[in-house]
Length: 131
Image (tube, rainbow, N blue to C red; front, side, top):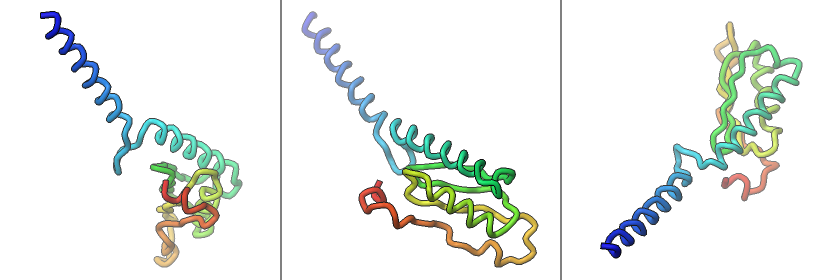
């Protein structure tokens, strides 16, 4: 009986260890705890930089980060603001690329929103881009 309970306890500990290990693994749609914290820091830094930028601080810009890729969404008042927000986000340490989905509100020219959807920053090394 002792052997059976000991075997059961060992099995339970191994199972718990495997579940704990797999719980921290990252997948394409989920982040590890460390990556989540890193992304949260990047998001906070991008938001702070946007607020510090005089031409952007009053605009409705939402920032999200997943695996060091920053997504900008919301509304701005000009095409220059779209470009400026992407540049500001791209200067933040740790940002691999910026997906700029900002929309110019009340734009009469349909070409005003024509822009690259994904900006990759050449100042990063190949090792950083593979993150």
